[in-house]
Image (cartoon, rainbow, N blue to C red; front, side):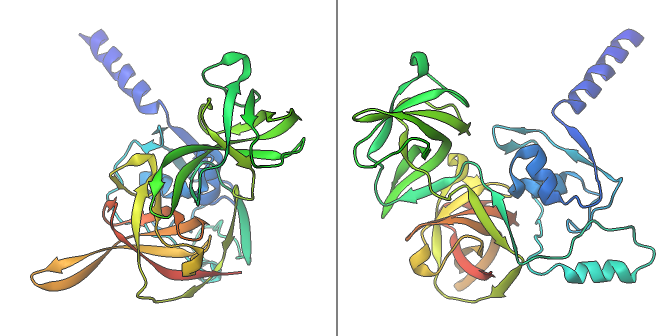
Length: 328
C-alpha cells in the first residue's frame, strides 16, 4: 500500500513539474523580457503574471524572486485567465520615484523609460488587398512539410526577385469585405532564380511550410516600434472584431484579434484600443469595456492587435475603439 502511495505521489509531482520552468529574476528583468525569452513572444507576459499570483504589480518584480513559467500547448494557456489583467501604459518614472522614496522596498528592476523600443514579431495575421500572385510550388525532396534550413521553390509571376532578397510565406485564412486575411507562416531568402521560379531557403518558420502557401517580398512586418508615451483620445468612430487568432470563437489575454479599422481611420501600429460590448439593457443603451489591446499591424482598412487584458471573453462582433495614440 505504501508503495502504491509513493508511486502515485511521484507521478503527481512529475506531472506537476512537466512543462513548467522556474526563472530566477535578475536585475533588469521585466515580465515583458521573460515572456520573450521563454515564449518567443513578449505579448504573452500576462500569462506569467496571472500564473504567479504573488506578483501584485507587473511593473515591480525583484531580483532573486522566482517566477514559474507555465506550459503553453498549441498557443493555448494551461490556466484560465478569468480576472482582469492590467497593463501600465505611458511613462514609468512614477513607479521608479515611488520605489526610491520607500526605504523598506526591495530594489526594483523597473528601468527609466525611453522614447520607444523596437521588438521582433513572430507569426500574426495581416490583410492584403489581394492575394499575392506568387506561391510555393515545390518543396525540397518532395517533402510534405519543410522547416528552417530547407528549400522551397516559388513561382514568379508579378514580383521581380533578386538573389539574397528576403521572402515572406503567407497562409491564407479567409476573404474579408475589403481584403484577404492571411497569416505570416515564415521567412526565407532567395538563393537562385530561374526563368519563372526561384529557390528560397527557409530562415524562420512559425509552422510547417508546404506547397500552396503564398509568397511575396518581405517588408518590415517583423518589427514593432513601441512607444513609452501615449496621448489619450476619445472618438465615436468604432470598428468591429472580425477575426480571433487560432480561429477561436472567444479569446483573451495573450491572443490576437483583427478589426475593421486601419491606417485610413487613423489607426497605426503601437496604438492602444479598447474592446467594447454594446447593447440594450432594460431599454437603455449600455457599453461594457471587455478588454484592451495593442495594435501590432495596420493596413488601409484592417488592423491586428495583441490582447493585453480582458475582463470578459472577447468575441467576434465586439466593438473596438481607439483610446491611446502612440507618440514617437
